[in-house]
Image (cartoon, rainbow, N blue to C red; front, top):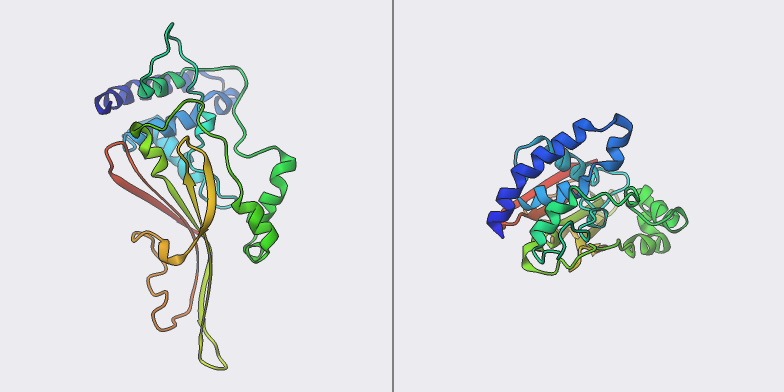
Length: 248
């Protein structure tokens, strides 16, 4: 499987480059399978190529507030279709085929329809909303669709390795009246399920990865801290670790 991924990556990069350059500018955004590119490029450790550079840029853009989106939206990469008479059971081949699949339905929405997303958007638009239990509950119950093929095998562990830590705010300061240290923080964690479904859950400062920067003095005496960031990390197909952090 690993060798197949390594062989497919250069071919996919060339094919995507040719496809994109041949499309009229208004149509490119709708026909370019960016989530298929993210899926394959992430698995290969983001190899150097124009399509993978664009895929990684979109991956990072999605965690750049506001709102914070799932960086990989695998439900927008139609892997279920196959050009073979007998569809291959090899999931790496399915990923490759997805680059050239066009079912004419246009790109899937990143979020549910407007009537369903309105309270979710409201819950994530302002840091003050984190204190509202009703809005926070809407936001944390957001669950996305999933892959249209079975990705429960170990070759797709790299999808399930992706974690998104949204530090909505972290405040630490000394009380001027009694000298106590006041600390408060709201951290949520986005993870992927067995079939690529995405969900948010409550998390904490203590759960942040060691590579996260900005809260090193949290809990030490009481230096003044105000911090907001989104941190995403992952492991590629070979298990190599990678991460990105966006401060705001």
